[in-house]
Image (cartoon, rainbow, N blue to C red; front, top):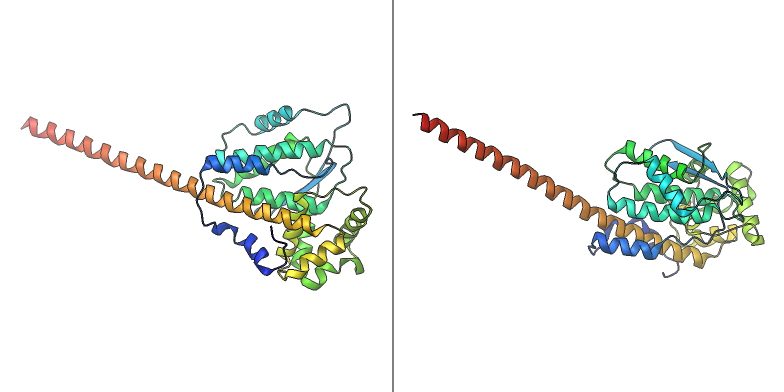
Length: 294
């Protein structure tokens, strides 16, 4: 995408639900296959997630060893066992793709946990599952997803980042290095590791986590992202590119969900019409029987 150097980039991501062109569910699936969340990180020791809809707080620690690494098929099977109810294809296609990609990250040995990555992950999950028919099922699916990766719920780094970002503005958000605090320490550690290039692994989830921080701080000025990337020693061009991918993903998701809603509404209307027709037919038969008795 064009570098995120204008307010239109941020508004474009926020307004991605206003997609101008309809797509089919089949096209959406192929687009997700292309997207594939090819994250350039090397493994996953832990992951913290939080839902804006519920007080979901997790820090999930990797329990794998070099001799105990399940296959992708086993991870997918674990998910299907943990949640064995049908999931609409519009959600299931992307969920399984995310699960595969996260499996590949989780069992790499060189990955070091990153709270911004965690915030990005839960942001993607919440946006993906937004509008799911049942809140309870959405939470159960999330639990099954986490357990499929053999990770355990524990604490809430993502929620801490969200709460911290809500109290920031454009200036204070990028000035974390001169302040003391739990979140500031997290960001300083990321900046140090990113600067060394040895123990930091950039990913699209990380880029989305950065955008979420900006979004919560209402920091839409075009220079804020650039300053934040510089403060964290992160390549802004990579962030720009991945935020564009994220924006396109959201747009396609909304279009597909609209198609799904239209289909469900259309089928519901057909069922109601069939019920009315059946009632009319039954009444006609009864009237005939009554008349024949006379």
